[in-house]
Length: 376
Image (cartoon, rainbow, N blue to C red):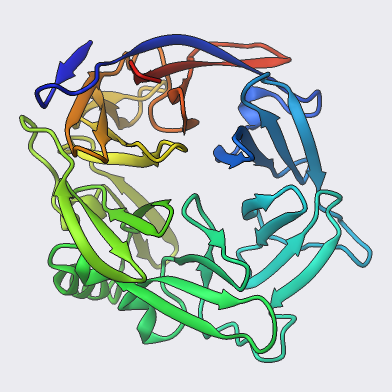
């Protein structure tokens, strides 16, 4: 159901189903984090599979596999990682890999290592910085740009800044940009609360920082912010409203307490807040750069799990927001939470936001429901 938040905004609506034909070595349950790359006006969907060590790249136009890049287990091109890798595709011959072990690689589509950074660089200390790759990462021909990984495990400067860049050639030159306090309300208070809690027996979840990028502009926000903050060259240049009224939003500290880990001698206890206030799950960028999409979780309520021995949070509802970057007008669509997966496997293309359909057991393909704007 469409809910217009602003006057004269293009309508957002259900655009039907789309199909991705899976490689025979992976099924829909093995899909990792999905991301879209636009190369030469063509859109490609990719994901990493831990079991096969493969990056699968599909054409969104045909839904068919375009390339499979399998990371070597041994030999001169061996890449070691604990569970999975983060990556971004600059082009098919330049794929940047983050092993999550402070080791970074540039590989080609044959998974041959072109360049190794990080622990294999004499000038790099594992305690200096931990950079992660995500949808807003990019390579400008000189430096690789990404986010500072959370939780922080390096210098105190990591708690000040949220973005980091490292030079590909020559001495490892790391530059920091985008201060957390510029887009996280009461950031020092949030940081102090986390430090106090984790000095005791508790461990809190991380506070995600959502970044998307279009050209020279970086857009930043958090799960509980109703604004989007615009940065250029690391400096805040603008902010604008990107929310919807009618819901009680969680605070940053309330969000941190959605899941707590309590450490006691001989045991670890996990506590879940089952009655959660509203928060934003994800922020996505239309590859054409016209819209930013936000997925609003309208709070949760407690239900018994399948075994009947514990209570878990169940969604009250979810809304997709589309913010037109040229006018900053907002349109909203109430998502059919009984029909599509909300909390994982969503991505944005120029058609709109793709949500994986629930209760499908196809061996060779996966179905996505597209919610998009009427001029796409």
